[in-house]
Image (cartoon, rainbow, N blue to C red):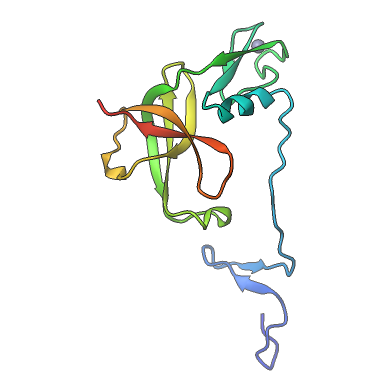
Length: 162
Ligand SMILES: [Zn+2]
């Protein structure tokens, strides 16, 4: 918003998508997620060793990936750990070219959802040289690697050669 001399007097700009006025605060927030993981810490320990764990409710039998410390279905906290086999089929994918702020440092990446043979759906980046090779229903597996610039193990969906 401009005053009579044409100087900007309020930090209001037009939103590029909607055309509506938007307040741009002077303070820049640096956001770092802090997520409590007590109860599912073992998942991250296993991930470090290239293994994927889920939880299963001992009371009602419901299985969860990502793992849950308590069962959302029957509210029991009597859970057991189960190993995920890591093979499945690709349900869908998308190539992300317009990235959120915190992913600007990465080249374009592929996000996918796979249905694992164990019955879990898993959302992850797909590691693939050429996304044109990807097909719905193709065999995939979960693989483990550190993302560039991140010093911890992550899991990825990788196509399996038939
Ligand atoms: Zn349950």
